[in-house]
Image 1 (tube, rainbow, N blue to C red):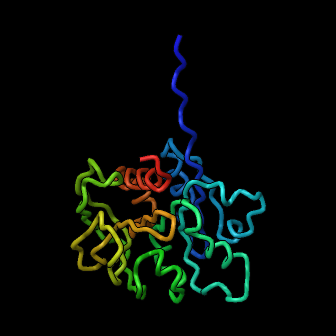
Image 2 (cartoon, rainbow, N blue to C red):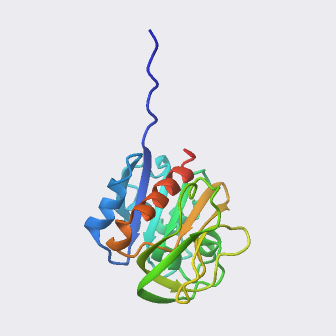
Image 3 (cartoon, helix red, strand yellow):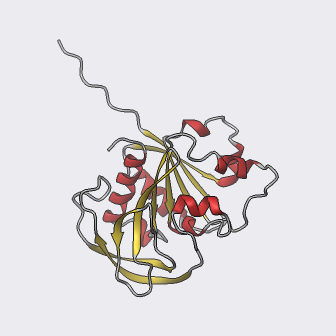
Length: 219
């Protein structure tokens, strides 16, 4: 008699929000559609407070916040929590408007791989997404697709970033998705993700699912 292989534990994922409204049911449905993760939606203040003493137990962190003020230089839970990013191998997903968070903070720019994060935005754009690295685990097997989303015009991800998805849309930055390394952590940045028209898109869901799996070292 042989033992059946045991399933791997689900990927424990913190989904961190704040300072920007979003479609709550659609956002929840996005993460509920990913069977491999166990997600914990929380605002940045709760993530930093870590009342349950579990912050270091997450396999992946998804940032979907839009805080504009740099956390105070003299201590503070939020600054301390974010300064600890990269000390472990916890993967970091910076999603949509989180790329624009903390615009004057070099730490966040280093994580995102964009030095100048001044931006313009255009809602309701039909974005044609091209796969430029089809061999990466996040994008393997995907084909080009279109979806309606809010776009940003800003500096592209540059040195130290591996570009996965791009667009030629004149109202968007060219680089849509990229990976990089921040200290000990894998980072995945993805410009897309404004509302439920995107959250419900099967290709977008595949990218988020694979992105989190890659961040957690599962693929």
